[in-house]
Length: 387
Ligand code: AMP
Ligand code: MG
Image 1 (cartoon, protein in one colour):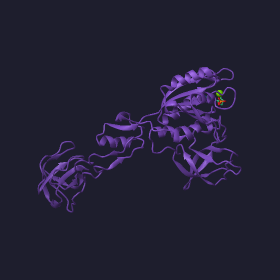
Image 2 (image 1 turned 30 degrees about the vertical axis):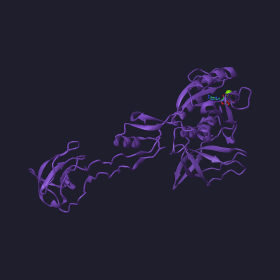
Image 3 (image 1 turned 45 degrees about the vertical axis):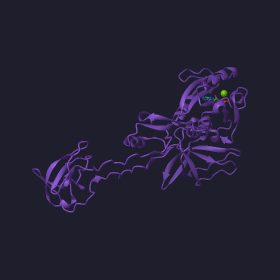
Image 4 (image 1 turned 120 degrees about the vertical axis):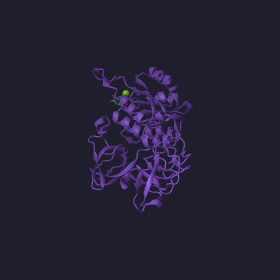
């Protein structure tokens, strides 16, 4: 699937909207930081050679208001944090370390050049790569760009995703379900998951279990979308219409997977490089297959360097039974035990039981077979969040 997924291209975005976006090109510093010798403390700018002497205070260098003459022998300039170290001075003495007497200041002995100020280029050098393409922009990265004077950044375009639930049993959340009806919970779960993965989502609502109406709804929405995500309607029952629909619109590459939960997961490519993911209807199945297949694809479209969730070795705190012919993604919470993280099952792993995923810290891959994994085995966990 990932090999059929392409980067969507870059766009320039103002810093105000860069949070969570993915940088599309390396950022190289065009100038050094700090740009000038900048005081780290409040005190006096002096020559280290004047250590131990009483010096005449001839002016002040405050942040943004430099002192524009040089500091000569026998002279000090009052300086505030962020103020430019005046020419001639080679160190700053902290306010706490001097004795003031009228306009004379006595500085301690043993001063060293370079003390208490940030030299130009100490934080970063001109030409240094400060941010690599593929990083997600958080507070520090955006601050760094701003410190370098960049008002906008090249970032990967967000995938536009059309999201549709299917099933005649579904009612809008908040409406009272009639007999045999249930609220459309997948829409809201998948909307949250899609947004976390960086997508711009258009909600198509509930598609009916009727082929022509379903086709009209999907065809109309595809004009404006890069990706179609559906839930339900992909198993083999007579009302499962998504697979035939995707077959008629494009090429179905995956029609089922050896996964538990999520066997009927379907993947298709559509004209113009668009993708379609037909997720199973069961709430846990739709979210687990989203994690395994859709989230990495959406991240690749945005140019993310890191497509998958981070993993950590954890110790199984229970006997994990395997499924004979399918890899099982079990949901667990993690707790600390000495140096180890221990995985504890979230209880019944039924694909309809969202409680098995709510609050889960990780997914564990249990390989197929008749063996399972015994309590105490070390396994690599896909981390969703840490305790
Ligand atoms: P399906 O794949 O359409 O056969 O659906 C499998 C199960 O998931 C059925 O019990 C459906 O009622 C349930 N289901 C399907 N879509 C949703 C949805 N949007 N929200 C909650 N449950 C759903
Ligand atoms: Mg259905």
